[in-house]
Image (cartoon, rainbow, N blue to C red):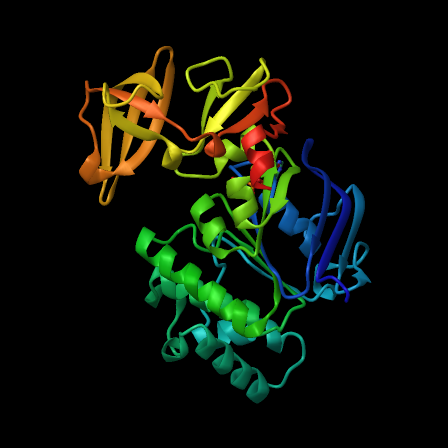
Length: 349
Ligand SMILES: Nc1ncnc2c1ncn2[C@@H]1O[C@H](COP(=O)(O)OP(=O)(O)OP(=O)(O)O)[C@@H](O)[C@H]1O
């Protein structure tokens, strides 16, 4: 079966800055791939390279088995939704949605029918007569999605479409994006800097760093087997604790010069004295987040965060025993940052 989208050795320079530095990526037909990374990692540049909005300096882009590297944006049959939605203020919602379709030659009636169907598919059929200034942020976002959908693209490119929405709306809209995707089955690349959005939405996640893909995997793989220290600390809220291997959590058999990682969810905090197994630490700060609490601990020279049930949380100043089961430890090369398999990890494979 042909892939939905293939990038091979893609480089892109924005001004004088190398924004993409050798991207190799295959997105399956019908897959929803999330590109995750911090500001400046090259996420928008990757979408622009696929859409043809910027000329790549090396490499190839193929969509649905067709090499589009030399084609103009209008010839690629991709739809892009920008962070800003870029709706035309003087047009109604119906005309905004139909716009892309009309300029491609469809007659007025057919374009209006398609616009109404696309609006219905993202739940904004009742907004067709309004203008953009009469819409909330979430409604604008839906209209922008509908406008992209109406073209029935081969690839759907979403550039942080939820960035301007409040937290509750972000959560409900990401569910809707997934539902629309599952219904239509269009190959989709969704860009975000929000790791929880990436985990919730993606069939797979490509973690981008400085114009390169640091890891490409399912949300489970990225969470349980981060390929590098960077991925380990970027994914998770908060990310993984990282400590020197000769520090307080040293498991048997860890090479000196490695760094150990443990997710806050896997740090057990027990009142000091009730067990001898573990390291002694002191609670510095506690943040209660509803059901859970984040406990900021000091273990000798090191800071560690634990996520514990709020009802069992210790208090600032408490001396506690900190324990991590061997199977929850990760190790990374202190110099390269690459993952090093631990004996407990090998045993669970
Ligand atoms: N128009 C431009 N001219 C010059 N350099 C640019 C331009 N746009 C982006 N860059 C640079 O290219 C690199 C990648 O930027 P890009 O916008 O792709 O990152 P991003 O991951 O999408 O970031 P953000 O989350 O902030 O949108 C950055 O170093 C950025 O400063």
